[in-house]
Image (tube, rainbow, N blue to C red; front, side, top):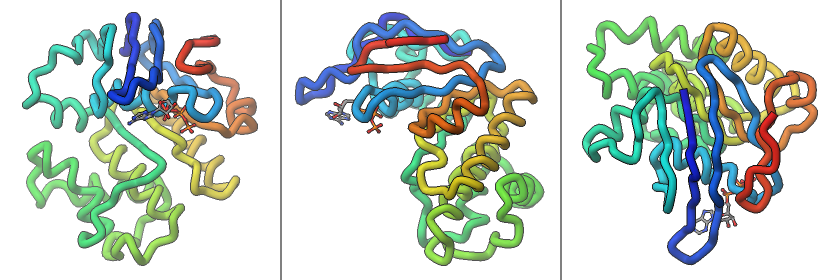
Length: 219
Ligand SMILES: Nc1ncnc2c1ncn2[C@@H]1O[C@H](COP(=O)(O)OP(=O)(O)OP(=O)(O)O)[C@@H](O)[C@H]1O
C-alpha cells in the first residue's frame, strides 16, 4: 500500500526533519506514528499527502511512485487518501453538509447522488442532524469530526491522520479510534500520528517511532 525508500526531508531553512527513512505499511495495516514533538511525524504524513516534497528518496503508494505524478494529478491523488489533520480547515461560509460533500463534488458526483453518502459519513462520526449548521456553530471537537467525515466520505483505502483526537475529550477520542479500528477491519490502511500513548497501548497496534527525524522503531 505504502512504501518509503530512503526518504529525507530538509526544509528550505536547513532544518532536517527526516533522515533516510525506510518504511512500509501493508494493505489493510494500521500503525501509530509516535515520537517527541518535532520528531518528524507531521512531515512524514505531509510527504505522503504530497503537501511537501522529499529532498531525497522515493514514496510509493499503491504501486505508483508519487514523486513522478504529473502536477495535474495531485488533487485527484489527494482526494483518494483520507487526510485528517488536527487543524481541520473547514470552509466557514459553507454548511456542514457542503463541507463534507466537497470531495465528492470534486470527484464528479452529481449533487443529486451525494446526499446519502454525506449523511452516512456524518452518521459515522455521530453528527447526523448537524448538516445545516455552519462550522462556527459547532464546538472544536465537532468541527474535528466534520473534518473526519469529509475525509471518510470518499471511502479511501488509505487514511493518514495527524493528531486526530487532539481536540477531543477522552471518551470521544476513544470513539474515534474505535471508528478507525472498524475501518481497519474493513481493510482500510491507516497511519495515525498521535501523542496519546494510553490509547495506543490499549489498541495494541503496530507502532512506528521517530526520533529527531530518524526511524527509531517500527514494530
Ligand atoms: N515548514 C517548515 N519549515 C522549516 N522547518 C520545519 C517546517 N515544518 C516542520 N519543520 C521542522 O521539522 C522538524 C519536524 O517537524 P514536524 O512538524 O514534522 O514534527 P512532529 O513530530 O509532527 O511534531 P509535533 O508532535 O510537535 O507536531 C521540526 O524541527 C520542525 O521545527
